[in-house]
Length: 381
Ligand SMILES: Cc1ncc(COP(=O)(O)O)c(C=O)c1O
Image (cartoon, rainbow, N blue to C red):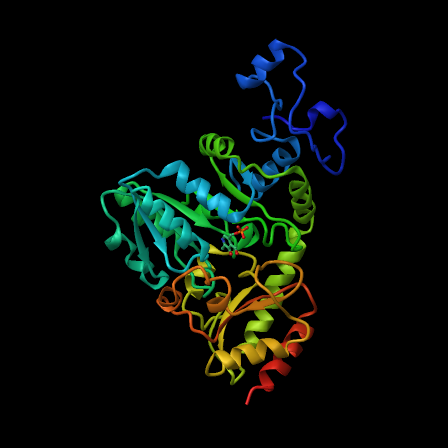
């Protein structure tokens, strides 16, 4: 597809927000050419939108993909991938260490006849052992949500090849600045663009990048189920992308400094940040990530959930909120928030504890974030 905005003549610096749901057909021949894919053109928003299409092309470039498809949220992106490639009787391998709402989707998939295997990210080195002849998809995150564990993507691809399964990587935590899963062997890469790509807590979007052929298959699903992103959110996302590298570089360098501070504090234990040499995933992270290790950290505070709550309630700069990858630093207790969708025993089965907190480091001055964390931690008895 050529520049989606070509019909407007000189290209505007900011992509216009095309609100139109439908488009006038100039004549039947143009309609035929559009629907036969001979020329670029638009007919109905559920099919395509020029504002959305422009942003898709930018994200495809960032992930070094042939194309990218945008949809209404990160979870819509995950669900579109499952619905497009899985059928009854297939085995899907999921990791406990993925965003909690995928558990709910897995229940729907099971109802539709998909067999789901759950693994812990710590079991990923033995992934091949857990694959079945009917395993058709392996879906992983690295670093994982919320514990920030590292999964070796290239090794997962080798395991997947043994049974001919496709590898899908949710790259939301790493972002395209630090990791490009397609280059490491993934067939598709997913983003909750709600997070660092958008970056300002003001839009929801999901992105799936891959080959042109995969774009076409996913487009079929999106057009069928109606999960096309709206043009206004696409425009906000385009604006976010303009500062993405600046923000992400700052978040990653801040996170490194925050991790170094936290690693020396007596009220912090089980600190996970792939950038720390002491982190069990550091070696693999160094191999598959570049230009930093992202802005996400996980750690246990004090002895119990009351300590974690007191710590969070004492913070003055860092916000107590879910979501991640945005300008402000955010902290939450996954057990009480992002993992609430899971039955309590499943929330802790892979290492999350009630006093585990997840920190998304923002773009504030590193010393201000550290000072805030210090005063809140020092306040614990
Ligand atoms: C790693 C990851 N993937 C997917 C999602 C879902 O994204 P959204 O909230 O945009 O649906 C999230 C949300 O936090 C996430 O952290």
